[in-house]
Image 1 (cartoon, each protein chain N blue to C red):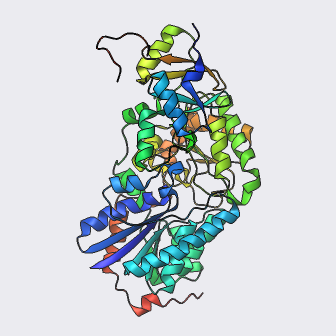
Image 2 (image 1 turned 180 degrees about the horizontal axis):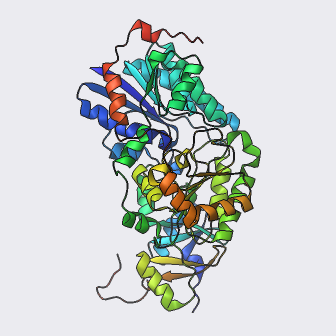
Image 3 (image 1 turned 30 degrees about the horizontal axis):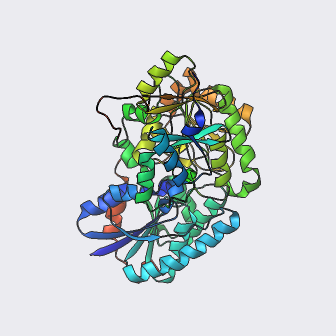
Length: 381
Length: 121
């Protein structure tokens, strides 16, 4: 039986892999192990390994990697810790395929380890453009990956242009949309109860991550967003950012300058987050979910700053610089009847999501023979 | 009558043990966590129990385990406050100003009143 190892370190990519693990379990002829690391193991970030176990999945390894401090240097050093540990886990598990997702450093470390150990590397959400270090990491993973699963034609084309051989590239779509398309999210009443929301009034969903290259101005960026929200006085739910450099600052500011109409949470299960998107009137911040998931709900998104720069986006997105007046104006525009109607009619999702993406990916994994041709890569253009 | 708030609050840097002592003394099963005068969370009996199950130590700061998605009210009218605490289904509801600074707390019941049935749990 083919054995697939999956690595997850943050709630973002867990959204990609969850529907896939369900598919693998259903397949009957594939086995899997999940290596859990980074944010999933940190109480400050919600200890979301519990969510994975609640889903009934097998966690084979828990690898602690995050050095405290959350500076650019501690981020880099933490990745080194993970590279050492994941190598040992791969030796022991001896998988046929390592399945990775997204653009985070721990995924790149797993790609480096697996490729060196002659294990087939498959990469979900490959070839997309994302900003800053994440974008560099995503394309670095592609160099170490033997199979690419692209979520849009744009992404597939980018992989080809970067010298990846055509037979390795599969246009499958974005698996994290499967559950949304199939209605796998919490009901509005549950969301209203959890966060004390009055759903007859506008709801803002805020997710603002630190931008690692802009480490020095992180505090200023959060202040600008909070100032815009303070001026609007609308009920707001905010979920804490990931643990990239600068996260402590963001969390401290969100905690300290929260306003009475703000609900703050460290981490929420995926279906609750999707449920929040479902009831929200506008999404604000710099999370990729404003670009990829929000269109499924025809949800307007105010995208702040550079984090998602260049990434493919639909008509639901309003790009603004990190400036309180611009943010406030964009939120007001997003909340207007006119813009909401426009998104309703024209807010097509640029990412492929037909509810069948994970099934397609698992089918390819099932059929793939791990051959020498597949393992020996030529990067040429 | 304005309450003495100290028995219902801990500082964000206080230990879990300090919160346990306060909760034991105030008989409300919960304390409000303050950063300066701002409300940043609450810690309940249940939060502490769940933290211990995750092997968090009693000397850890309450910040690590507090419920940051806590309910507050800005109502100043007592009857509106009463409605709010019933709506939110909590035993203690912090009353805050527009800066989220603590002004008072509303309790679901008076912890030191005689109640039929004798001893409190």
